[in-house]
Length: 335
Image 1 (cartoon, rainbow, N blue to C red):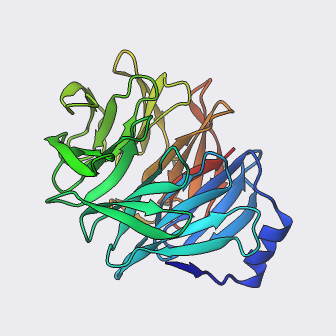
Image 2: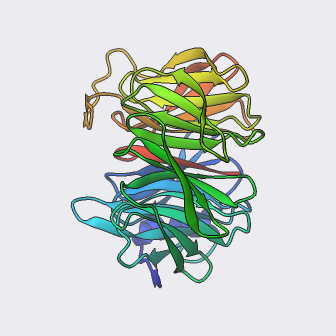
Image 3: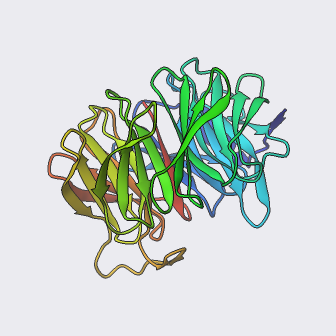
């Protein structure tokens, strides 16, 4: 089901005057129910989208024509995905997920027309037809709440983490069944697939580890210490480094993806800055992280400071901070 989303005139006007172009950073502001579009030249806000309540994750299409935003909700669970349609009048539409509440992790399949979405209330992995705005299939994940999801390069397998169970599952998207579920570590949350080896990397926040799994059996191949509540893991475009945000420590672990060792640690909090209350107390609370595919930069969402930390990957240090809306988390790049 597709519903048009009515936007304030001031926001809609931005769509008409500012096209999506290479170098836009999309930032989901969880407590503001918006996505900001920032220029990666200087962090200037060049656009804003209204979303549903609690936008938690963002995924951008390969052709850069649209992005999906999962509306997790707040006190009341969300049941929708906002589609940001760049260059179209109105700019957004909404897909209703029916009884599948608290949508969170998302990935687009290689065809660019369908996506997989985790929903914590129904405990399913949804296969969603983005073009027609409907749920095509709901795959049962069993006990525990599926949170984040990653895909194999060919789009035939999905990997889902469950924070409450401390596990990672493998889902065969051809047969539409869960084939494996194994322990990863307490608080398993972030998940990413290495672009070359296909290995599945999981950040386990309570355990303070990152586990590396065989993509077929999910057997643990390596365990890497990343202290301080590792909450997300992503890869640089060349696959040489895994990047892990440690939410409590307010650091970024830069891991050599070949040697499976932490190469360096980048401090993300700033001395003397008063951070607001977060789920971990008054803290910087870095969560979302993404590597720029074209520039030597990494962007980390500092949820407790309402800002983006810009990290130079030549020096591996923070070189700038960009203002965001309230409680930034999800990040995406429009190339």
